[in-house]
Length: 224
Image (cartoon, rainbow, N blue to C red):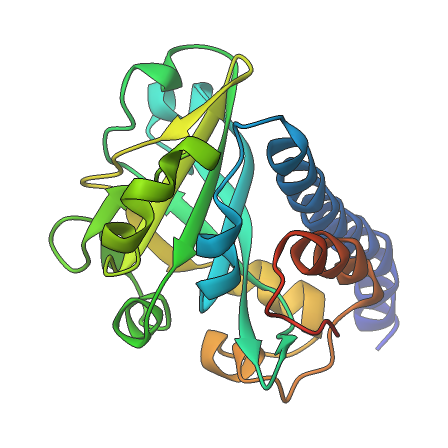
């Protein structure tokens, strides 16, 4: 009994550290969106962000992941539910080719899920871009208005930022899946992405900066 108690006691700091790490990733996702959208004429067109069913952000994906073949990046996903944003579900991105921008430093990935079909793909156990879901490079800035109507018919729009450059990007071959371990850390249970994104699960306080950023740049949402 003492051994069990000691093991549980020692696990408490580890769990706290894991929770802190996931919360930091949520904050980093909010920072990425704020920085991208505040860049003059270089952000995601507001019309697209306002029309998106869901938004996924993977901040600071490191080049080292491609060298060792491990986890390439972790991020968060939130969807609109009755005018508010759902609790964030954690996701992982693995494999694939991300173009020349991935060559140095860290890369931020932003994805807009534009319709029900794209949303259902993200709710599955995993999907591979190009095979299971179509993703196109998203148009950038106010000058992209002419491309916006075509982009509205895409399932998923993808963007990347590396070395200060922000642009639409192809993610063919990349695999997205829920990060079950981090979801368990964040919500204390084996909550599925569908349950988390349904709007029925209470969001952690750390998600508020992300909601603030989404609501600031997305006119059609009402916030949480």
